[in-house]
Length: 112
Length: 113
View 1 (tube, chains in turn brown, blue):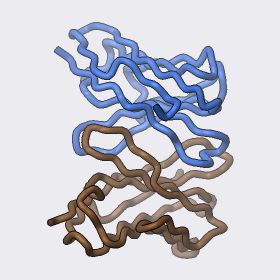
View 2 (tube, helix red, strand yellow; view 1 turned 180 degrees about the horizontal axis):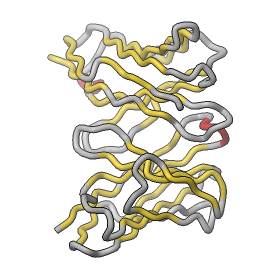
View 3 (tube, chains in turn cyan, orange; view 1 turned 180 degrees about the vertical axis):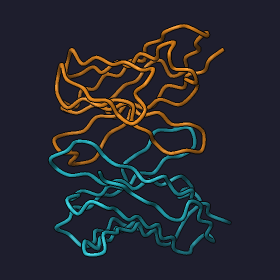
View 4 (cartoon, chains in turn brown, cyan; view 1 turned 120 degrees about the vertical axis):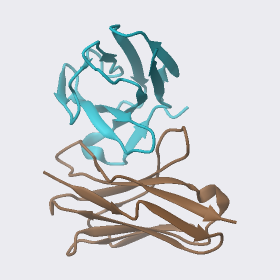
């Protein structure tokens, strides 16, 4: 079955710098890749997603890139702000299967 | 808020007691899920349902049971067979094929006393 690996487990960056979180997946049939942000004690919330027919997607300060050949996708956050501090999860799924397979999460710390 | 509601927000369970967590959605989503999250950890799938009257076990189904009698509702029962139930429980729903991602309820924090 599908397996999703996420790195790093913890990422500390200076406020204003960029942050990059990477995920790899094992099943080439996966075609949907969302990213979630979870603040302490709260529910995960979808922040951006990408489908396999697209290589990159941007939404203001966040972007996701997908390399189907290498089977990895990345979350990029530019001009980081204190409110970006949270745990970020990547996931993968196939259209024919409702189940999302989750990465283990990355704790992002923004240093003032 | 968000179209998917979990209740209660906090729940305390005595040893040997069954408890039921409620999850209701008005998003007209076919699929619903239950996840368990331990402190500082990721999401582990307990059960999921793709259609009414049908559900499948996830990775950690032992000690839990679910039902899906209505499209809008997917309650989770934590039974006395679950030896370490203290955790944060999250319910989610999604449209066909996971498109648009999963939307989460606000979670139920269960503590054994």
